[in-house]
Image 1 (spheres, one colour):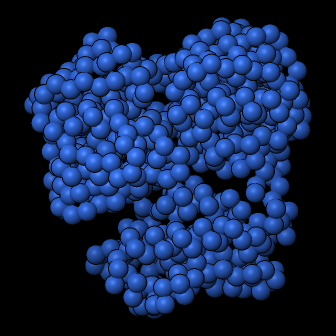
Image 2 (cartoon, one colour):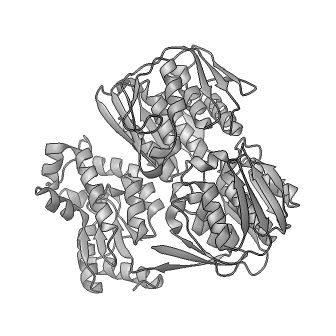
Image 3 (spheres, helix red, strand yellow):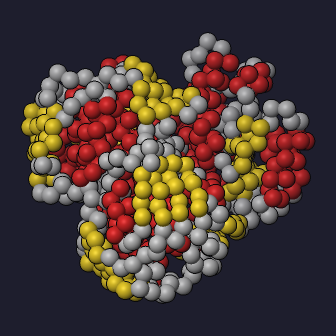
Length: 601
């Protein structure tokens, strides 16, 4: 297990943090780009577990998603999707599950949509029923109302549909975005619509892609017929949810923090959190593409966060420092997230000596003098980031499994360190995991590294071959790539239980977020970065590997695959080593040097 200890700021600071692209807008842009067809460039996308899950599903359907610098290019046409069976793994991304379900109802083939872990316990029934009203044929694979589901049809009929608004705004967003490819669609919301700003974001994004939708008081929506998505380029604005943690730190530590890459007029739901900080006495000012928070401390408040539930955990942590009683209402949706967030909040605040009470829809925090504790994250990225805020003002706070932030903000800890917060990591005999493209020398470096350090060697590809009794080219030829990836994931889960091993992975292991999560649980990921021309030259000497694409030659294939993966390698890696001009011995020594710097060897 990895753990991070946070050393608080000694005094208020002045700092600037560049905020990554919005997860919510990135996932919407990916779906809208797929619905547009042709070639769409998404600038400043967020690269995280959630957005990668969306990318992986689109690729499974046959669309191309490639990174070019800081942009993501999506190309293909839904009409070209083959009429066959598809297995769409949405991992832990609820957004992806909802959006892909809607998309699956208008494309050919039989599409099975499933996630892993708690995602399959998150309700999807209201969206299924709404799509059925438009003619979709959908069946539940296991439990009624929950993933996994199987979509048997490939088109929807225009018309009227009713949907409940009390569970997730993502249901409505999914319907709205696919509507232009269906015809005229009218949507009536039954009950109160929660998380309304997310609906506004969806309609705004649709507008930028060329389609207008009408919103009548969040009760009735109309998407007129004869509209098409036409955008060829879309720029993702900064993520207000990610920015909110640094805004909270500014308030708590009385610092001045400027958030870069921000839209001061953003429709994102968590803009409401900034107004809550203002109600506490903090000063928020807007620049052209910045937002600055001048912190003045925290005090008890009573607020309804139904429209911005993602920052309820952050506010609860701030409330632990505010002398008096804070009540946060409108949070029933938190009980259906990555974890049961209200229960998790109460448990971890109790460790800090903070008394809480809760109802189905609220939590009350009796703040005052929190004490440091070792915080469990429950596999929930927002638990980690919210309690990290406490660590900037409280000596001795530790957080278990800090890498869960990769779901939405992979570089959170680096950003935290950039404002002057000191972080120290503890590792319990971690695995040393080499990642990178085929031809990057991972197996050879791992072998020599294990000998150099006297550690066990675990070669993932060799373990798959031993389990199956045949070579990887034979596995792929006989069963296909998806079968191989499933067997690879099985071996990854076994490797993740090791301690102190040197691990060589296959080039595509990072394509599944669940693999990355498992490898990071007890491992340090080191990316051996090699240019495409060097990789192609090495691979041309080894003709035994199965092809990854139908490219005309090795160089084109490597350039294509590297464009899809390089950004992700860099995102998930703890260390990046450019091995372009290094000999084998120099590569091994550079890995050892990086490990020594981290106090691992």
